[in-house]
Length: 315
Length: 168
Image 1: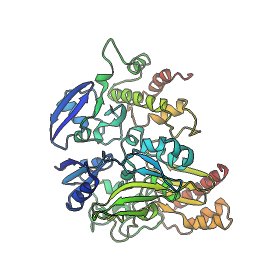
Image 2: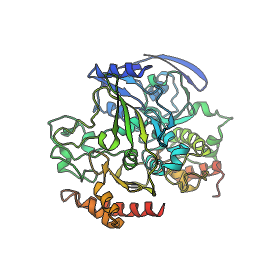
Image 3: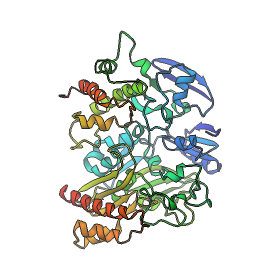
Image 4: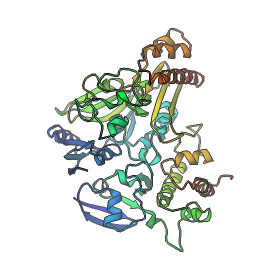
């Protein structure tokens, strides 16, 4: 690890200011992703502002009948919360499909959304990577790419966002609330938080420097069933090759793009009366992969059809 | 960086580089070498300790984050002659070969049993709103963050099954 200084934040606005004014500063919450990347020197912040004990670790009901989840709430406590298990089972299922018990006890809601990609070439510091070292090239384009994107990739980057939680939140039409450096509050849909790679894959979200995610707001649960499915190389504790979340008429995919992927074509097909298989096929018509990833298009199509079917029978 | 933590019931104040992980603080500064450094990236679970009663990977935490926290390591669970029930169960079921992963396995089991007692579901839980029954599939899933390269898994499962009171 490169040397850094550390401060524990006691005031959210002061923490936002401290990070906004120092280009080398980063927020630290659970640390499960950031500290790992710092050990590999993929991340090398010069200052850490620990926001883990700011009062954003609770959960409350909103006037609209939804839930406001604190950004610092751990993944384990969120998955275990009685109201989440009862009304948003797709979210509990998604969180429990990710990481290990130990990691979920430490990782936070906001940190989960902002986790970096697990692309092997991003982690391999001996290889070029436009996300790690802008302008150096994309090694994944020439290598095995089972984890690569099949929607919205660019010549600069085919990395995927591999959060399970964010896929469920996208299907649930959740929003993040942030505190901005100018003292304001901003609301952003989870499906719009992350960006496609285009020519600047190192820019991963639309958050400004120092902007802090303080909460995730879930609207009331949608009518209809919910379901979550994940396919991976091991039976447990592995990142996904593909994930699908369904909540009522909304469908989202994970590990297929640089962001949690809202399957808008599948949703439109379902609304028009299509079968699960037809809806899945409608979305996959827009998928794009080189010949080393065509298997992934078939995988996601089948997983999506099965998961839409499961959600239908879970009504 | 000055940090005070309570380790196995004793308050300890350390003044160390901010880069010091909780694991390195325990091993290198407090002499508690029961917690092991396997992968140092949160993938193997050998460094698992309990912080405020909750199991975490001590390698993916810096000491400074834990000011005021209560930390329990394998050394604080039991002693020769007065073993913790989880230690006793591992002994009786011969749930180890080389033993390197064992402190992490045992601390993880203690935390996992509490999570199940609190009604926390896992990926293997069919009904998210019912109580937890620790079937073999539940135990395997909940312990997937602890790797045993000797592959003593059948005996680890047997030890935990004894504690969970499930039929063999």
